[in-house]
Image (cartoon, rainbow, N blue to C red):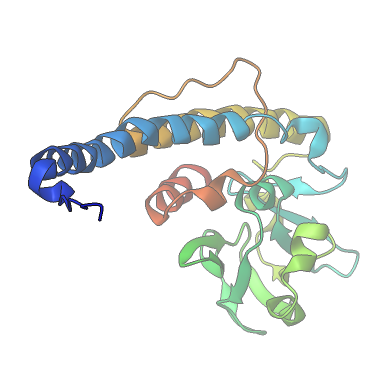
Length: 234
């Protein structure tokens, strides 16, 4: 009858296995730390290719404001007010909440709406002062319409009180296009700076690179707050 000898590998190799397991456990956090900047760089590389001036809608006849809103004075003397295409390209899909009601008075620079996305938010301020004539309230239940056509999807119609005075620094046509191009460049710098701070490593943007997707949607509330301060002030 054959004799079988039972050997417990943990009696003979136990220490070696424990050392190997311990070694791999130590490697996991180092692997994560080393790859986090790489993933951030990959994200940045993906985020520099598709949003360009040619892809953005900048209709003739609208006044564009430096807080990324637009306004248009109708024949009735009421001005439509909304968000520009660049802002919506950067954020991606958002939910809209109105902060003012019909017949309320609003001042230039006052908060009139809030856009939110997964706990992050930006406040939209009015480019003009006046009395609110209409609220496009249906957009709260159909916020996708804003991204599809931000210039038909006005937020408010306001009866302006200081139209000429408050629209003196607004831009139209070619001037608006040139300003939007500069805003794209400024946002590239902001995106690179924010990503570098998050990853702890410098992120290099390709020269002439174009933004793709919705870069702000990949960033946290701290970055959104910075964007609010740098790009949505009037």
